[in-house]
Length: 152
Length: 116
Length: 263
Image 1 (spheres, rainbow over the protein chains, first blue to last red):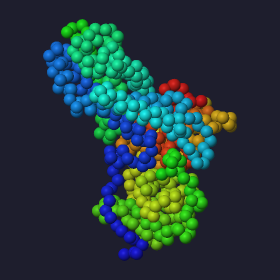
Image 2 (tube, each protein chain N blue to C red):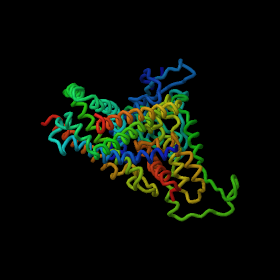
Image 3 (cartoon, each protein chain N blue to C red):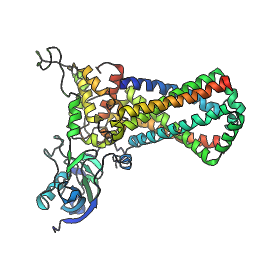
Image 4 (cartoon, chains in turn green, brown, red):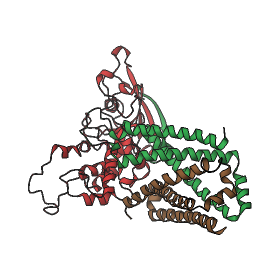
């Protein structure tokens, strides 16, 4: 055995598209994490919307059914779920504004001669600021949600 | 339908959601009724449905949110190997789910405003 | 990582530690996998490689190939960041092996693996067939229709400096494949054209000499075209030549939505 070979260990074959691998693949910059949060929040809101449409539909069954449905849903776990939806919706909305601004406006930058050290315009300070605003507003929405749902 | 056409519709739906969702959340949180819990009583809910502005807001929000949500779900599913091979199935299934959700929501609005 | 993690640190000799503090050897952990032998088993083999100031990852791999195991498979060519051959995963990040100095990694253990999102042929060498076929699909050449298809232009095609800079940065692409390796959409969607092909589609769409906007629009305005990009921005974060493919893709989307060539 060559003395330059220090160790050999088995490893997994790289499989394309493994969800956990995808989520935390380097480079792990804020914009990539924002995409992950945008997708997770989007799916969460969609699932909530699905149930929300059916729950609110019980109002057509009369007072009794509505009140018993509301009674069943008035528990700490459901309130936590609603709070999470508010937080998710706030991030999804403000980050969504950032995405739309990058897709449709000059915020994304203008082509120019690339000079070293090659700072990517599409990852510039403008869009990063909007992302920070999204994070701030999500925190504020979380606080507001706590106040409104639990009256703290 | 071209992908750019779907995207244009999506942008319109996004703008509609911004306006109507803000009104919807504000109604429950701040305006007109005292407190979140009070906004969920039977009389409060049915009373709000009598107003045309509520009907319009909820109707637009329902259609826009269902389109936007299911368009996003369709895009995520089409990325998977399973979804890409069954492109028509994914698009049709999400469309049908959207129609079902909008249909049920509109039923609620119509029955509550004019029926019950 | 540096404070501004969209900028790669300058790979100059100035950043290497002074000789008295340099490690004499470094540990190079390399992904080894030969589908035709060892029952297709994948291993991480750690080699002790002598360190010298200015050692790059490609240099280290070449030392292993020359002194330990000639069967180590990896691509390299120019060793100066212009051919695009040596794209690989270095400490988990897609980078060019020839432009990555061991010293700038600030670690005595360097992990080298094949690029993500590509099938592995052997060890670090990956299959670029999908990458090249996506590139070909966007018709990456000037399309002129005045004299009919395949006819060369009858006169010199002139262009102002401003018209050139509208697309110039996208011509810097060396097709190293790092952007497709970093893209989270490419990770799942094999049919997605990818940031490289889409940026090249924009390069030609924005070129005032090109007359093929409609043909290209029909290629990118599809289910797995430019609208599948969701702005992770990882492509631009890893691009070693400042192409900024994410910018190209967003400008392409804008052009498609406007319905006219981006000029």
